[in-house]
Image (spheres, rainbow, N blue to C red):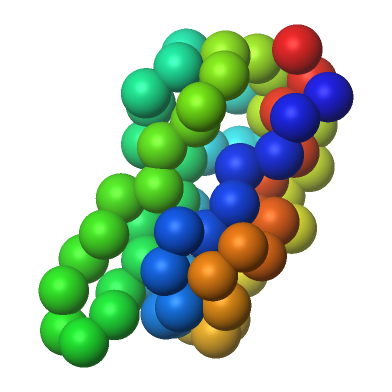
Length: 71
């Protein structure tokens, strides 16, 4: 099991995956908005999306877990 974490403090602008999706290393799973810029958050490992831990519009801090992947 691995988790995809926010690399910046911002707001969840868009969630690009749903539970059950297969993702590869480097795939965008969430897009964060910070200071009017969109920042993609990419999976560091491949796997299946097990759980989404955030909602669109939610404020997140750097290091917060956003998505859980089942490797």
